[in-house]
Amino acid sequence: MDFDIKDIKLADKGSLRIEWANQSMPVLNRIGKRFAEEKPLKGLCLAACLHVTTETASLMRTLKTGGASVFLCASNPLSTQDDVAASLVKHDKIPVFAIKGEDNKTYYKHLNSVLDAKPQYTMDDGADLVSTLHSDRIELIDGVRGGTEETTTGIIRLKSMAADKVLRYPIIAVNDAKTKHFFDNRYGTGQSTIDGIIRATNRLIAGSAFVVCGYGWCGKGLSMRARGMGANVIVTEVDAVAALEAVMDGFTVMPINKAAKVGDFFCTVTGNINVIRKEHFKVMKDGAIVSNSGHFNVELDLEGLETITKSKRTIRPFAEEYILENDRRINILGEGRLINLAAAEGHPSSVMDMSFANQALSIEYMVKSKESFKNDVYPVPEAIDMQIAIEKLAAMDVAIDKLTAQQKKYLSSWTMGT
Image (tube, rainbow, N blue to C red; front, side, top):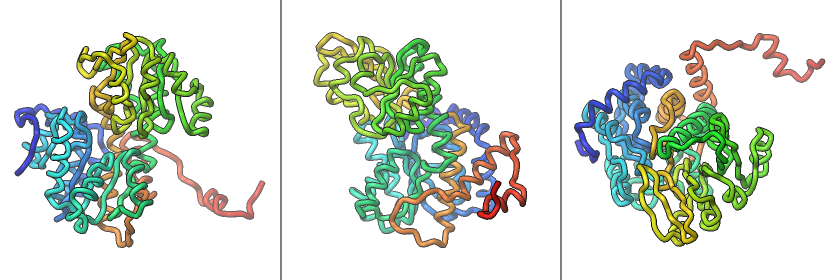
């Protein structure tokens, strides 16, 4: 079996961490038990480009249990947990191509390694796998039947491809499932981003000015958690409705050029490019701490920062100190890559349980579906979303009400009034 990981000797440590995470993933475990009996993915080859974490390991094992041949690479150079990669290779015989801190050349080499398996389905986080298939490995495209996408950034890219009529196979937007973005993006990103920032800096959040760039679901979660830690949260936005919502939620909203002058902590969660630029770095306080929790490091204009920097050094793990021409110090965390995985362990497994349940059931749906999919981006079927919510509540021992016959009739009627 071909693979490329840091050290196979880390496998036993990784196995224990996977076991710990799996204890908080009851929905995926239920799916795994059914997959073991039914083998709905039997004979299929699946290439996955995801963050190689303990939670992802549980998903890979579930897919393999369902009968698929699974090949895994990292969706970000800094997000790999090397002990997890080793455990998947040694204990589960799943080919993994991922090393924490790999350079860009190795990153794309690993993407191509999973594509060498000639997959019929893809599972992506950020759409780099899909993009590589459509550009450098076009000879494989006719063999691909469908795929899924995990994150906001990837959905943006894929919808652009579909709009330009260049997407060559259908994709299910797992990110847009309610049981994904309501919980993973809000509670997962909120908690894990704060965790990553604190691990990288050991600085006090309380009393600080904490600037959150973007008030989507990730931004909402991060703002909530920063405020919970005692920060004075400032939100920057380009969307008037999102900005209004932030104001109504009790946050201060201002343009980034003003926020740059007063912030102590900065974190981008937009999915867009150059959100914090050279002109913003120039006016930041001495010692400002800047991070990103969006998928790609393009949210920070690091090239622009370099042009106004006279020296830099790694002052502590995951923290680079840039000394500007004006002698102010700007601290960039995790090379500008998503800080919750660069410096911490990513989302808690209980929220990834829902995200990865969506992944497993969406792939099964594509395999079993009799529908004729076009080369487009599709939502997760509402029935799958609801099934996951019901199973998650059951696992949490939470009961809810059901509509009575009278209530159902009332909701479907136009004749019943006051």
